[in-house]
View 1 (cartoon, helix red, strand yellow):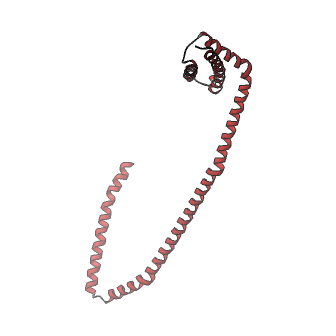
View 2 (spheres, rainbow, N blue to C red):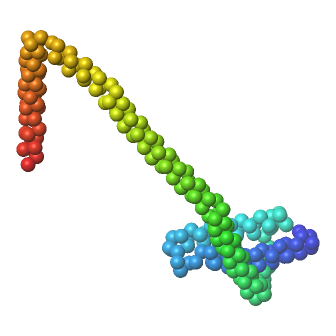
View 3 (spheres, rainbow, N blue to C red):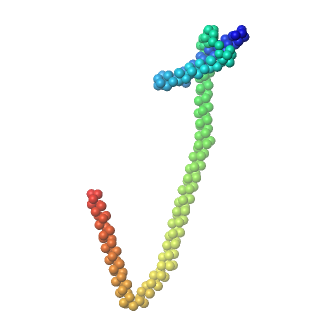
Length: 211
């Protein structure tokens, strides 16, 4: 390994040590260990250390083809210590500022979507529904009025003349025919009464059974 490669490796590992410190603070900031269950914290820690290890190995492989030296661990510790002493407070302030800005942008976006999209759509849906209800009521009233007019026309213009003709025809019938018709009518009425009485018996049984 040449001196330039060793120098680049030292710089890269110092940078990775500082990046590890920033990543650790970011991880702890979002994880909130005291509010999480232990198994969630355990899984997140394993994933964090796995990602950090792979990242360090990838940078090391890119710089010196993955050769491990003792000074690499020293450089990582130096980078981590430099972050803790020089950059931690600044980074945490920047992180909190970025979180606050992100939350405010998200809240603004949600409010804008509600004001510009959701509320107009709700107003449009309410307007369309009101129009449909008004149209339905109007059609119902119109149909009801047309039926009333039709019934009035049937009753006064059609049924009355037909009724008068039938009465006149009834008066002109012979008495024998009238008596035959009356007998037939009485028989039919009696049969209907019998059917009505028999059909009411099962209904009475069902009501008594329920009691």
